[in-house]
Length: 248
Image (cartoon, rainbow, N blue to C red; front, side, top):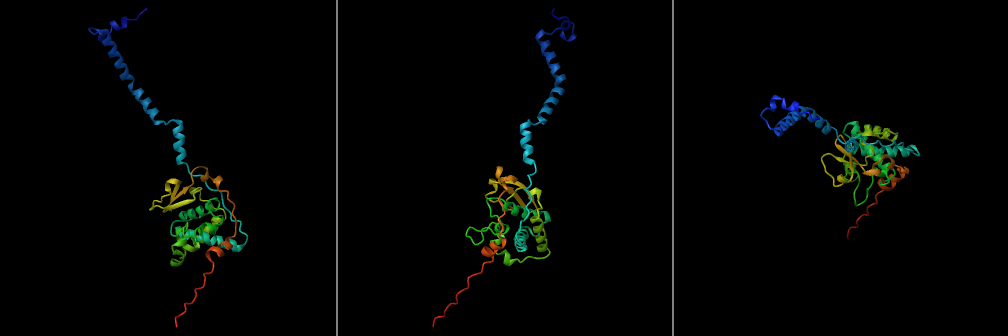
């Protein structure tokens, strides 16, 4: 049985064609329901799809910290030399920055010691490239800073203390597995090839992309021989200059 009485008895229906009345009732229904519909649409737009949410959140997660490094020094002389080399990197790269900035430099050096792409000693990492035409990894080693700017106090003593703590296992979690960095006022060509980790003080830190930038990649064994490296590559005696003979 068709229910048509309600439509014909509606005062709004008098004098209107049936199709017009249906259109009017439909429009009224949509207007009444609109707030709920729009609210539902806003709710849906405020929630990202699960896959997108995971990817976005993963990009903002703190980097995984590097495992602690404890120097297995063979002798007090070995530890003293490793501490000195690491303190030089701390002092000349970030000696007048806050403590966190100086600790971050030490962490990068120790990350490199365990990365197969770099030497496996502290002094070897700090002085990588010394004596080569290709240049040094750390600019202060080759640009004359070591003799032009002798360390000042109390920054040098503080650098030695930070180096000692780092060699005893202190970890800077914010740096993660970073093996590269640069000052915030330069834009190196290699920047797009690595993954930005954080900025601490005046330095921006990066790690290798993919698995190479994970803690599991820092597996290269420390080789030791800090004193031997220093004597062979840094403190080697300079050849004596031959006296020029004056022409008679």
